Amino acid sequence: MKNFIYKKSISEKISYIKLITDLSHEIGISITDSKELVDTAIIFINPKEINYEELKEEILSYIVINIFSLVCKL
Image 1 (cartoon, helix red, strand yellow):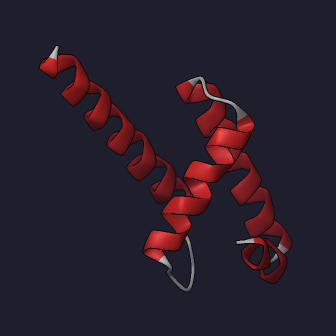
Image 2 (tube, rainbow, N blue to C red):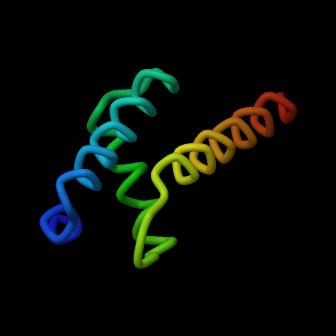
């Protein structure tokens, strides 16, 4: 995954870092955990170009659905 960040333009790097920090603050997890979450999502989608806003929404939706599922099981 380290190669991913080196191959991207400056604006894509800024978007990548912004996505990580936004998710960290919105979800309430550490920056390290947020980075792992984003890197994992990028590995699974593996597109030529990444729309970071869409990726953020998809990650947040996934987390909300899973939390709701866990709460319903209680």
